[in-house]
Length: 391
Image (cartoon, rainbow, N blue to C red; front, side, top):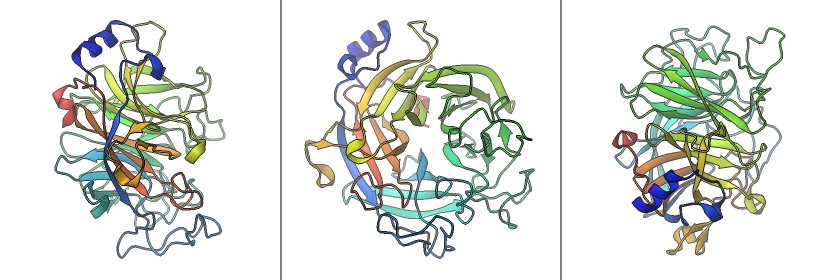
């Protein structure tokens, strides 16, 4: 994202998180498009019966259909379209049984500022790969079955999805059919895990696999927990390596350290064999939001402190907007509570999307349900990414 000289300097010394000392300058907003909050899958079933009393942020509850919302993972199709993963619905296992887990196919148009929904597919388990009871008898997966938060597409066209209820790794076909039993992370269980058997969870609720990067070789996955496992240093998050060829974790693990223990990660993507782009955020929205950042994290740990080196590459609350895109001023803020999607467009440009937590978040306008927003951000220098990172 930055010039060769600055990059060389950044690699020669330990990366630092403080924006005042970052090798990267201010990033720039280059594109903006928005999908209205109240967008529903055509002809879909009503939803939100247990989402609570309404209206919420001006939206009546329940909803007339399945909301196209909660973008928790993104895949660049390299044709101007993207596949985006919905989250589990309305925030928890108990209230999301009528929300169908789905991958949406969208086309943002930064010239018109609009996002078109082209279609998509539901996630299903017709072959009974899930060994525990599901919500629906037709085995269409719901937000009470899994909390899906991260997605990558393998080189063979199948999808790997990270879940927070297990946490599990889930392997799906091109059409969304589960191909094998959910793969657990040994030694880690969330409160929603059905195999606690009276034991205590060691990971907080909604702190499972929030981000997952596909290694540039296509063989390995790097799922990243959103929360700290009990007994680890507060604010330290485990990134494990999973071998898709052997179907098991390799035992290799890296540690990403949050700027503050109360922060969360939103997404992770590979840049090369050692570097990842990772979204880190606080849990505030609107004017209260103070930290929404994109870091370059390096596993080589040059300062030998046991955690990944971090370099700030974009402050999403302070993007230059010289063209006033989206009708905003010369400084653009992405002030959403949950920012959970990043993908490479070229060696100096990324796309970032928010999870709007429909209808509960109102970071853009108080009292009004957030839209799903798609932005493109040009970094001040090049990433020098491996060419395979763009596949």
